[in-house]
Length: 357
Image (cartoon, rainbow, N blue to C red; front, side, top):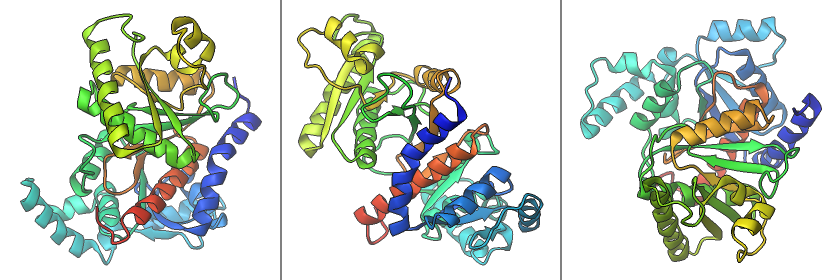
């Protein structure tokens, strides 16, 4: 199992390059559940690193007392109580417009906007913040619901999915850079062929952005290149074909491989035995799972048994950067996740300088 010093080194290997980028382009990151000591410490660290302007949602008095009791400095950290905010009335009016456009039944707009997840999502959607981190004290579904209802979807992604980044330089065959990008580990129970292809391409593009080089995407199955002909293996193979078409038509710097077993994706020696005519290559950088069970179970095993440090999950398919962290998340996980969505916000502002997808 990885010791504390090695885990800190793993965290730094991922977060330090992101913090350097954010120092040049600091972003406003809203934390929807601010009454949490982990969040206060992360906010203090982000300010100290000159990487972001943290915005904490919650009861102002409780947040300030929690900070005072634990010696946390909240200088340059913004604390907002949604119902006392100057944007509250305007957000209520916008919610009514959204409800009419999307045919949502909203009984009490003020009650809904007063919920931190909805308020934070509207802040990001309407330019009051650049990125969002939530879920540290709530069930994932409550955060997902707010984001899906309040933030515009990306047209090229058929359904929002989750991307988790793992750092484990102490493990063999763990990506080409000691990082693995895992998708989907949190939202889509049984991805369709279209969804698998989208997950592979979009996750590959994100990994390319973080790693700064060509990445290898492995679409996983219990089958390798037709060794089994079950419906699930055929579905993954079809997703591979569609993903490759999109990579070719969009001229993307990605390599899509599949359908392959996990050992073939990660261990070049195993790949050489099972696919002797295949060129020897490095471990895959991106793992695309055939279903939610496989992805989520793999994530938890790598995290809790193998000592991999997790960041995210980054929620892909929204027009604004957002992430959900688990209630068990460490301070390092939350800090790295915040840095990741901050860097995603830099990419968003470069791609959409006028603020719209």
